[in-house]
Image (tube, rainbow, N blue to C red; front, top):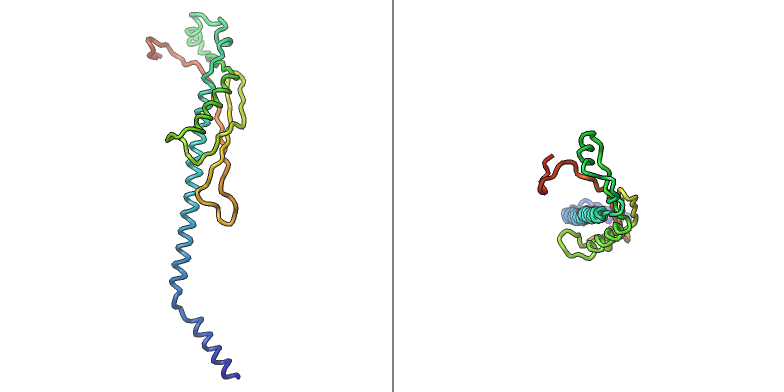
Length: 188
């Protein structure tokens, strides 16, 4: 019996010391690591491109909203032909152009809707509906925040994450350009 168990022990030691097939294990391991790295890099690049697209949509919406002129505040009759030369001579800043906040909010929503439903090249197609999460307008400046869900090309391993929510914000004002314009050309 001792002879039999000693023979089994030697066979066991010989099988452990046998290195045939060890390269296959290393190659398979490196292949798995390479594929996992490619999946992670694809997900990260998708998020970066989607974030840039969301920022562009948010900035475009803010610019469209700020272009809505509040005509009743703008044309109050306080300016005359000496207002601009006096402002330049005294180096006084021009007032900000007033924004119609109600119409501006509507224009912001229209622009975000346009970005959400556009199949153009500027929009990243993994973005879901772009939502307006915050809109602030005080008549002189406009601030907005947006949010959108992005589908990841590959599901994150060992989790149920297949999409991520991204947010963006933009703020802007509308100011008078300094200078003297002759036939649409700025001479200042």
